[in-house]
Length: 94
Image 1 (cartoon, rainbow, N blue to C red):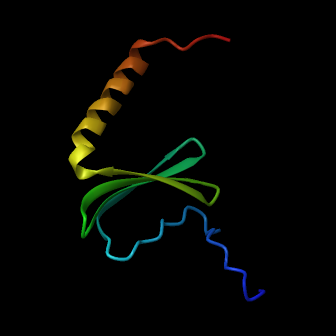
Image 2 (cartoon, helix red, strand yellow):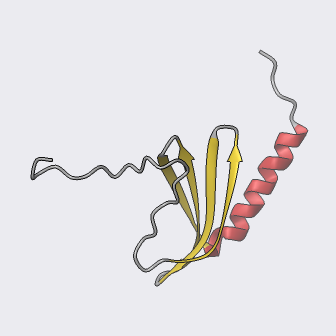
């Protein structure tokens, strides 16, 4: 490796656990696989407060969203509403 190169941030382990950030404590973690995607849902806490981190792992690539604890009930209501609309709306035929 050349001195100005940095090691890759990519983690090639299959379904790797997202890296723990300094100062974060994991309260609870669950995993769910949907089709070819693995989702890791983790309730965490750091000095700024509690939050939910949802990480999508597709072939070693990670994308995350963070929902502060203060918005978790609203986020849940939104997901419940989307699921309700999905159940009531027939799929379009191509």
